[in-house]
Length: 226
Length: 170
Length: 211
Image (cartoon, rainbow over all chains, first blue to last red):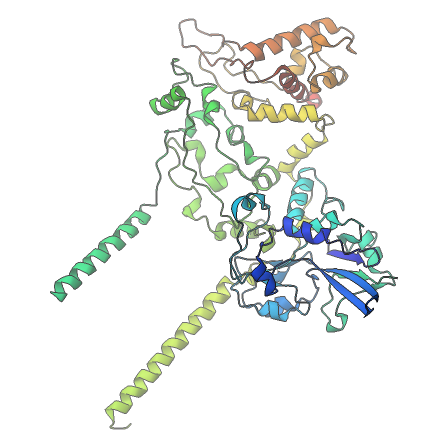
């Protein structure tokens, strides 16, 4: 049974934000406005977190793409009163918008602050409405959303594979950020497959997780830059 | 005076409420523009997916365009018999404005390919006994007229298929 | 019990309101448990336990395994066959045509056996003509066909193409009866390369295993 995970090599990441744009386009991220941005409430499921050490101009910077860490022990799922977020059998932490009551317990509980609440009704003015991805739901005001490893792409891949009588191939299910990455620093795959690249890299001596001491067991692994 | 006013308001509200109840109770049946007879066509040997082309390969099954009817139905020929309402649309070269009844909600992902082609479920299991239907669909044909989640989840549990929320709600 | 009616009523109201609220709360709890998806979400991964070769999916898989199925020309032919409505009369896999009243053959011709009617009796024969047809080329315009006797095949192909282009009125079984369903003319709707691709698709449908 596949367990989907990701490895991000920080040595290779240049912080170009192609993944951020790809994710926003793929998942119908609400456009927001300058006022909303001033309040720090623009929703982008994938963001680049700069980790800067030293004083300008002698700095070392790490650009870390962060998205829902798809924890094995997700804090958000433990507090949801209506089971709108839960961890499914393939390890992906689901978020069902139509079940969410907007209490924001999960937004509070997530130690990485990677769950996003829709404080306003998302709007797609004019022709931008035609550019939305039909495979991903449009959220409404009052629900929480987060990265789900482009699960809609997995659904399509599974259907295609079933029609041809085989299992999903590793190159068929690729989330948008992985596809867009210019340096191929994001690697995605089945952590339960010992031969996959993801498993191999996750066992690397440079591997670390965010906030490991909290015990959330995230499935997104980062490789320390050299 | 206030008493008559109160009675009038009460009667008015009851009348309006009653109208809503009765119209919903009637089942909200719709009238289709052409009295399409499924039985006659199926008896002749036509397959479901020949007209509803998306049923085996797509997410939505679809309703055929009027030019498909025109392939066999010629207005001046006695066979196949062209009823007057169909002849009207064929002569005017207009698309028949079918009223779509089976519509998945926006938040649900339902793939016909998965259910028809991959699982081999017969169309009649969800859409009712279409082979016997001589009148067009005037309401959604799910068993017991429920198109809620119960129908889907019950079958999924019985057939031991995924009941993961994310499988159908993206 | 006190004689104070006011106090007694107050106690009654108090108890009444609180018990009503309590009952409502109990009802809500009952309903929320009943509706909770946690009871419905079955964490067994059925997918990995189901055999991949499901009977219904086998038809799709057999089509996918048919070595011609991946050819883009054949796929376009397949798409056109379904989209333009050929499947309505000739059946989805070209297997069984619909009944036609007073028609000489009773049923509209089935097209899965088209290869035989084009005198292509072996899979190798079909393979010889397929590349050209799938590319949209008409067989009578091809210089050399890798067949032992190409001329009759090309002639039969030209007949089939004519029937598709110009149509063909259905033959009457009983002269005095109604005119059965005609084959419509497609020359105004389909281009010749597309018709060649449809013919290519139909040639791949022949059930060689059944003999």
